[in-house]
Length: 500
Image (cartoon, rainbow, N blue to C red; front, side, top):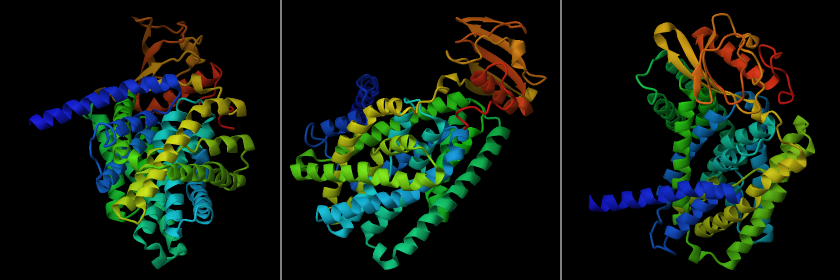
């Protein structure tokens, strides 16, 4: 028990320091993962002396953390942004990955003189974008919805082919089956995994809407549990991509406007932060700075330029060309393909399989992630502004939480009006909400009052809207349409710039 208490004390201290580091990283404009990796290095064998060399445990814990991160990303991704660009996301996650792997493998083999196994491993490990890095950085950069949707869809789907490729190359089985077999296997895992995730999400929405749980705190726990059911069920029962399944399930759950939506998102956001902190600190512990030499840094720079500049830009150009995407948007997507925990986690697979020189692959990938995340992350806001891909409507969206009133067959919507919403200045009567829907309370400057039809809404107001359950979706669509386009918006929202 005394040893357990010491571990709990050390873990709590690390977590508190990591939480404070979030504010520090925001002020410095650095991705928080760099600070967490640094904390892991500081705690490791080269500094404070904590020994951690279990690659298999790191691999397992890393995959569990990625499931939670993908769940949070899917819940907070807006389906109306992802749906139009889902084909582009799928192409980037398949053809784009293939192009990037080919470029990096050729550079590693012909320029650096590596054997083909290590060359392909480096290409496969460094090609996928990282969901944690993409979700956390892009939420702070208000880019156009279709760019954000494409990047988030890609990062949610490209883990499946790369995990499969790294595993096959590490075990040496790719020579037994050939490239056509591998391509068919990737297609099967992605398609069936996505379909299984859709099925789990659809069933989960029906259950959560019909079953009144005893406490608001049970809804977030249920959603996280359902996400793990989707991941584990796909991998165990169907032998398909659990990552594709859990991302699609989370997209459906996030779109469904379930009860206590904001409370659920807040809980999952906190759990995702915990997963990110634990993941990056653990990977920092697994690294050995004393083993990294100048030649590893040089290799990391060469591979980093190959994957970030040559491979990534070629992959985006080939993938986006059928969709007639402007070159400015292609440029931003190419540069915003951030690497983070995923490449380092994938590098633990050859370590666990005891592939020759796997420790060198891990060291090179670790250095590459540190250097290029430090370069790419802080430059994204500047690049988005220079390329003109910022979204002018980002500040107009309202936050809507849903609390069920089961005995009345109704729902209570909690609506927060942001500072730039066009709901400000609109009278209650001008909202033209469906018949039977009423605004029961307005909270302004911490003072609550019952509004009438002539009450003018203001920025910063919070409203309680009571609606019959069958009219809930129509009411939410109307509130969001007015928030974007003002009192003259159509019932289903204007067909404005973000939809075009």
